[in-house]
Image (cartoon, rainbow, N blue to C red; front, side, top):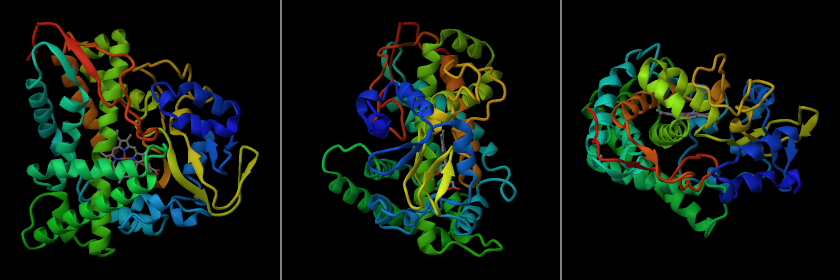
Length: 408
Ligand code: HEM
């Protein structure tokens, strides 16, 4: 097979459980042009440089052939899909209520809540038999946390889940059935979700509460306030990005630990090692495998190949994370790894906004599971995966338990 079909093979569902040999092939071939004109990059230093390069755009409108899944999605583009200075203005406004310097305590204050939610979910596991760690734990935890943080009422979480599924399906690059219909449904879901969140924010204007939507609706910064349209697309972005990826970090994490019993025992004995282990999981099995939406604003040269202005430039973070030129023994899972500057949260101006939250959620979740599930083993390996090759993770993670019960 030739490298010009690599992306098609990466996207092919049959390769979902183990795309890593394809990523090795990509690295060996340098910058690879696909037969549809897209360029794939999978080497660490090239990806890192492109993520910091102001000639590389995240805005679909910079493309020769913009993808309607992004340009006609019903709301104004959120800052993940804009370049500076617009990106910077919106990101700073969204950051004011979320983290330092204006809100330094917001994420730390969630520690107790996250622990409580994780423990309650584990309390509800059956004492023996099969548990699905996705449906019974890894999905409900982050969606509950981000909904509370934003100020979305608990009873509305099922609607958020349905909208999110439709939006994610809209930019799934695998062909599947009726892509046009999927795109329409995604558009409607984004609009519905935006209106819903905009409506909540409007209520909070007259009755502010302590949540993020209230702050986004009421706070003035030096650069003013979000317009109602900006608020809608920002809130949709935060709500979706705030849980879809964290689910995969927790499930990829448990899957990897159950496959590496020595590492698991070590972490169970010393939970203080978990922050480093989570970084290694972000390197080894990153929840966002590639970034599909960059394109150069001018012709650029990458590792000796000219990538023309407006061509889709696909940065395969998961391939960069296993580049032997950057990481020693990269295919080995080593929770004690030093010098672990992985690309799991991206890099440069779009580096993940929610990384501090994702990190503490994953650390608390995995420590709680290790402490309380001392008898779990994988019921299926590999487990069934979700469709998306971009937001990659198990759809279900069935584990079996003997009769010892959940320890307290
Ligand atoms: C394990 C969990 C997560 C992973 C692996 C992850 C990964 C990423 C990556 C790779 C990017 C860069 C996208 C790009 O360069 O185009 C990104 C951006 C972003 N993430 Fe996350 N993310 C996670 C959790 C979160 C959470 C919890 C939130 C919100 C609370 C969040 C909000 C965002 C936002 C708003 C952006 C856009 C930043 C910008 O454009 O400046 N993410 N994330």
